[in-house]
Image (cartoon, rainbow over all chains, first blue to last red; front, side, top):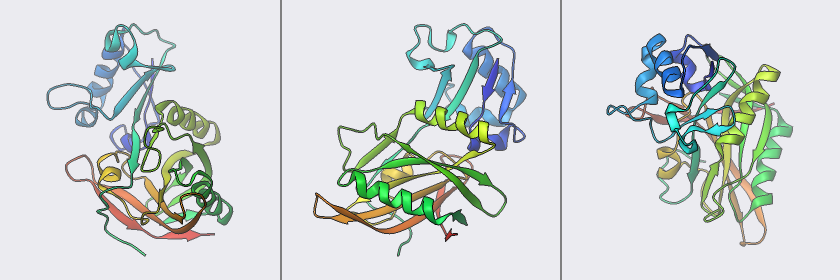
Length: 100
Length: 147
């Protein structure tokens, strides 16, 4: 399967945008990714081994968290995994360090 | 430095005026090198935080994935995001900071002041998310060059 790497995590995949790995499930694919690029591990997983809450993993167009088998969902060689950190924010509790 | 063409700069500010008094948000596609992030295209995103759109924004992961695919087709990357702060300064908030995970990317914020009906874009600032992880991340003020 192919795993698409978002911009901020390419620093840990030798700048590769896409990494090809072997694996029968989403979890195996991610394990193969972190085995090939160990520096990815702390960016994807908590010290307890859970996927970080702000890291979204999509199997093709489906959020893995909402698939019946979640990370144990089966994948084929033609499937695509996409790792995508969340993006959010808002205005209250201004704390910033600048401004004009 | 964040380098952005004038038409795109105007567009992201206008987006904040259009959605006022709610927050707007969008994705910036472009190129990066050691010194600069250069914006080539803006992709408007829907704010999924319809429960609190006046002071929160969230971009659906599906939109991020679509943006990443679009970028791949054009040889561009996601280089940052923009959003507006209706009736608040163009300054990052604790919420912005806690929810920031795209290291090396620009977070552009435009303040939009108004009367709760019509808003006008005021200040636009950019903050570069630096660091390597949640423990050492930092927002650094980033100069904007409008070309």
